[in-house]
Image 1 (spheres, rainbow, N blue to C red):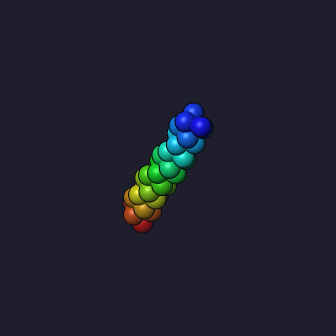
Image 2 (cartoon, rainbow, N blue to C red):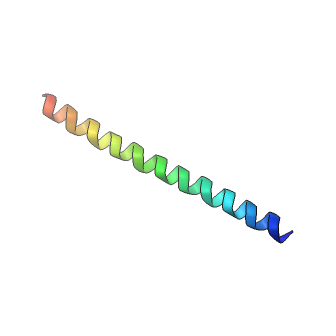
Length: 41
């Protein structure tokens, strides 16, 4: 029982970490895109 709890905790933590990283990467991409558009005009 304790092992199952530990595994599920690790899985849920990993999912949250990956989702957070995805948001950070998306925000960085948006910033790069905005800068490129400003320099193009």
